[in-house]
Length: 145
Image 1 (cartoon, rainbow, N blue to C red):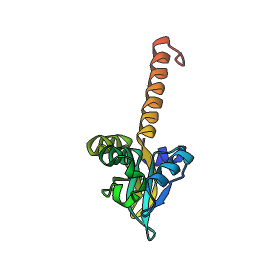
Image 2 (cartoon, one colour):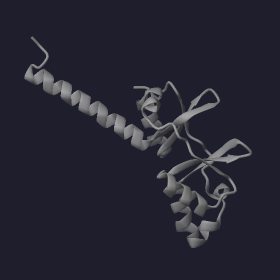
Image 3 (cartoon, rainbow, N blue to C red):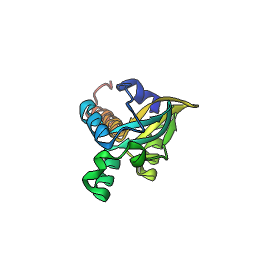
């Protein structure tokens, strides 16, 4: 399965937050939208990403004062991407190698979507279920004459 197939099956919303927003504002966005990741924009340009994990790491280093820090100070600047036609196994390898839970999907320079570790796990479970059903059918002789 390709990344584009996964994007066809999921909510297309991608959330952004301004670089000058505070960590508290990012946390509020995460809670309201029930997400854990947003793209950080500055002057209409994607300059990084912010995740729950980034905020937690900052909290452990800075304490409660992190709430007033700007997203720019906490964001991840090395944006992890893949191409729209990438196989899901490639994306899984990227996530493992880069130790990230989110990969931005690009077609050239255009952002097409976002794949999370949850999307990858769901695909893997769905594929296992399909294989399992096929194996049960094969063993029981269903569908064969």
